[in-house]
Image (cartoon, rainbow, N blue to C red):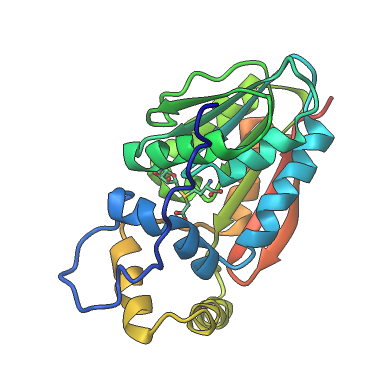
Length: 251
Ligand code: GEK
């Protein structure tokens, strides 16, 4: 009997706990090691959104179609999609441009007892070929794509999506109204404090992400999704400045 695959060791996120020189945030091996802890303690709603991706996938997946998880990290959203796909003739692909993330993702997939194969691709999602899609997920990934490239990517996703298919888009958002922005940011920071992050960790992570994670307003997302070719845009989840949107292409 072959030995059963081992769960990768996950560490507590203390990456920003000590004073450190300012540097841009990167999805490298040190982030990959702490990622499950980091995202759960930093992104309000993440632990709700992941199981709902399974529910939404099950609702919209079509036989003999492709499903894509763009920016799959360690595969939490990919595995949720896998469990929502009831058709054995579907093709599920996870894409990420961080080799460190994908290396761990492979281990999590190996541990998941499900027969549908998952193809992993290490590439920039701007280059990923898309076709015959029923469900595509961008779970907190579009925010890391340069804003000038976002319309082209969403138009490619919409064009590749079958009638009746969907895009699940989760994002950190910002607000036109200054006081709403302040209130939501404050509540997000309180969420992080409640999850054990210190003021220094919150502030150093914020600086590291400043040039890398560029949030946009809900109105900008909605307009762009409609221009890209989706017909209905539904915000199905919001907690503070984090949302998940279902963009549907009419059947
Ligand atoms: C989850 N969806 O657990 N091409 C490919 N991948 C990229 C690119 C790009 N251009 N830019 C960033 N990434 C996951 C969480 S995390 C969200 C997604 C977060 C990848 C990057 O390497 C990282 O793995 C992922 O997008 C974003 O549901 O860390 O807040």
